[in-house]
Image (tube, rainbow, N blue to C red):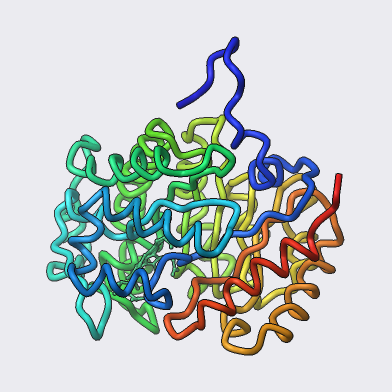
Amino acid sequence: MTSSSWATPPLWNQSPLMRAARGEPADRVPVWLMRQAGRYMAEYRAVRQKTTFLELCRNPDLCAEVMLVAVERLGVDAAILFSDLLPILEPMGLKLEFTAGEGPVIHNPIRTPDQVDRLCELESIEPLEYIIEAVRKTRAGLSERLPLIGFAGAPFTLASYAIEGGSSRSHVRVKSLMYQDPGAFAALMARLARAVTRYLNAQIDAGAQLVQLFDSWVGCLGPDDYRRFVLPHSRAVFASLRPHAPAIHFATGNPALVPLVAEAGGAVIGVDWRIRLDDAWKAIGPHKAIQGNLDPAVLLSTPAEIRRRAREVLDQAGGRPGHIFNLGHGVLPNTPVENVIALVDAVHELGSRGK
Ligand code: CP3
């Protein structure tokens, strides 16, 4: 809940993560990990034995439990809502399934410009109330010292799923619709941007202190196409978010997009390992915070190597305020949990500034 002027501000306001997101100095470098609750963790696998992934996403108590257990086990500096990018597409008219082998599948994808209206306007957040309830339950169970991050897919990544019908390597269907009929594509992106804005603001109102916009697939585009087809829509989202909740803008796959991603918006820019963190920060500019950027595959090595590589990332940040340590993408499913804990401990030790 937001504090009123006479009440003591909640402790999460001064947490290392909130301070870093605002570009303020903190006594240590905060760390959390994308996919910190996932199949690499035995506790998560135990829950998943009893329920499908979508059933889990629809159960607010279980979503909260899965994330709170992960936060406790790892000792990270934030929780992220446990959900997925894609449930938002269901009330917009798409039929979603998660299959064991292929991951997400959309049974009625948009393939031609005249099918764009298959994706309808998200008129109300009501059908996603179960996710908003998961935000409330996670916030209620979390230590007051730790912030909760809400999230959504960015318009391009969601459009990509809606058009490809699932994961894709070449992204050739989304690109062909985009190049064939820029007007229809822009209408689709604008509709998604309105839906995402409404969804993220509802998460903030329900108790998320920050939000992250995932543009996981945008790296398939070059800079000129990003500027023309994506940037205006992502910018529209950031421009309409509640101003008190800092936004993290994450993209992966193409370092040439980093300055444009920063231009589109977000107080914090999330970068992957394909660019050095110091170079990325130069491209972003000194007035924004940065999140990243260890290669998740480093977690498949040894605690000594993980510590060495964590130090390299911290050295590139150079102790400047505004660094949130994270991986450059999600924890891989075959990662040993001890290695993840070793990383969190290493960042806390090496990134401590002892005020
Ligand atoms: O970070 C967290 O711990 C919070 C939960 C979270 C999940 N997905 C849980 C999940 C978040 C923030 C996401 C976002 C998400 N979902 C992204 C953006 C991040 C990224 O990886 O780029 C994307 C692209 C998706 C779409 C998605 N969800 C795919 C492609 C898959 C299948 C591949 C896979 O890893 O299984 C999922 C499933 C998924 N989302 C799982 C989890 C824990 C695994 C589901 C299972 O239990 O089988």
